[in-house]
Length: 335
Ligand code: TYM
Image 1 (cartoon, rainbow, N blue to C red):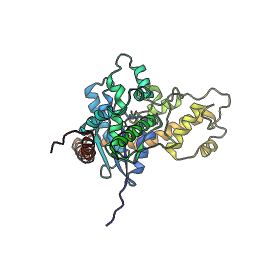
Image 2: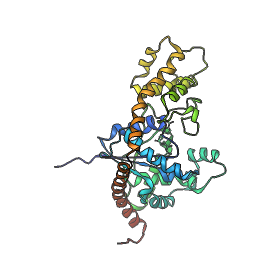
Image 3: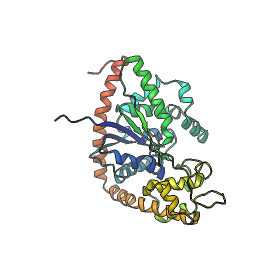
Image 4: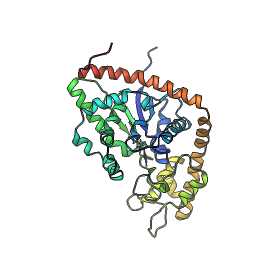
């Protein structure tokens, strides 16, 4: 049988907080829809979280919860390679090598580095600075065609492409140069409290977590900041009405309705009717995910089997790339 080789996808999420609606709509939901078409590698980026101080027990708990959530969100471990980043040592190894092919100036320009150093001014460590080279290693090890991410990670994927091209120019074709894969709807979910900033776990009031109770979700949407225009009308105008546009984006992502359909549905009703309706739609969307996560989390042996098998499959592919890289740069092979 001459089976066509599937295209490859790779992506990860830091278990530095519980998964939120932005992670789900911007990343995991799209991943689940791609499982049949692509050969997919998805991991818990636990090494990345160490750039900011973590409580060790909480980090371990969140890493396993995140794995359970990946599965609950539709990532079938039979169809996707699911693993914990630190279980595949090739990530750190290639990360070091790529550091030596990445310029200080390039790393200094990264927006996430600037934002995080401003927020953690007492701990601007080397890992925070070289974070994008570890991310480049995470990606390039698997020779992917596409990297599905939200809008905020586009700059890191572009740097990954630059590093891959630079390496290939010096040593000949070694890495596939991947493209970022960013969906239009859901790629940038904003905070419910400050709709001009992206939804993030560091702003718990503006952030809806996948494990939030229905009451909490309803409350957060009722309090969502809409715009102080006098129009009080549900209309998609991101520059003029960022709060309403964000809620429309969320509603569209969870219901599949277009912006036109949403405008018609709420014509003449105002924000007072719209906000709780978005809350209800999000509750309906997240309820089965929360229940399934709780169920999977109880089965520790199953989770362990998933991450062990995932690490074995990922290591096989990653080590193949590592052998090629080591040979090219001049490291002596062990066997
Ligand atoms: P992280 O952990 O911050 O976010 C994980 C994924 O969720 C997306 N995302 C959002 N999408 C829409 N709206 C939001 N408000 C929102 N917040 C987060 C992110 O774009 C991302 O796709 N460096 C990465 C993790 C990483 C990675 C990788 C990703 C490490 N290695 C290799 C891809 C490939 C990060 O910090 O994402």
